[in-house]
Length: 117
Image 1: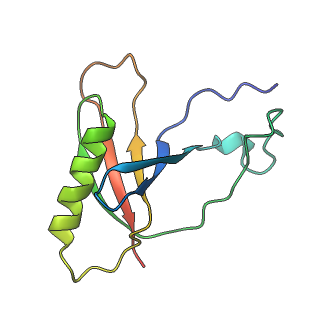
Image 2: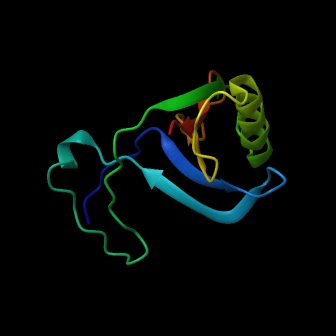
């Protein structure tokens, strides 16, 4: 029953298939605003869970525009190529992040994150 407004980024955990496409299994994460961090309201929907994301080091790439699944897959492939075989990072998932509300037409920010091992 508490209104918290929209937070950024909206983070989608993507689970890549063998061919690089995304599996249908995704997890959408929203940041709980600072004023609710110490005591977040309990979700009334059982499918919503409150999780604490541990600190992490990431490899990241940024791009603009209205991001589609194909954009995230494409930029993930570019990031993978840029990192080469020397960088150690989680291969079983990555994060697709959007920072802007849907009605913002220009100057949009999107990122792909690989979590360093």
